[in-house]
Image (cartoon, rainbow, N blue to C red; front, top):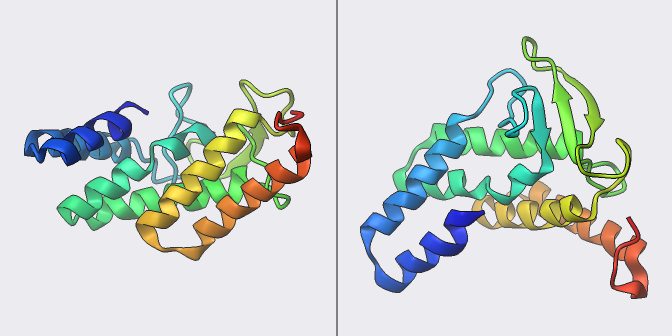
Length: 169
């Protein structure tokens, strides 16, 4: 959450390559957490845990990959997004907060939550992270699946919120 909104603007304002290097290192660090079994980057909580929150930072790895030409880093980031899309974003566009995976096989086990009301609920902040994250990843990749996921997340939010301006979840 820190690097994109600060160092990117700082780099753009100054052109100082040291600021760009910080962004690249942040992206490399993000990608270095990738788990081949399951094809995701785990949450800070546990290695078998995938949070929707990570969609707010995953573009750092895509930025770093674009800047360095590191295709493996880009693949790890895209794999993570596809895994998140498959297991945390439901058919109605709602987003689960957390998914749990078997550490050995990488098999998806279940949706859970650490901060939402229930495991099968939608968490307002996580919903916003899905919308922003998938939209941002679309800008980096041009992969229409990510745009479609962001639109589905937005549609779910709009449908459930209506004219209230405050989501009911």
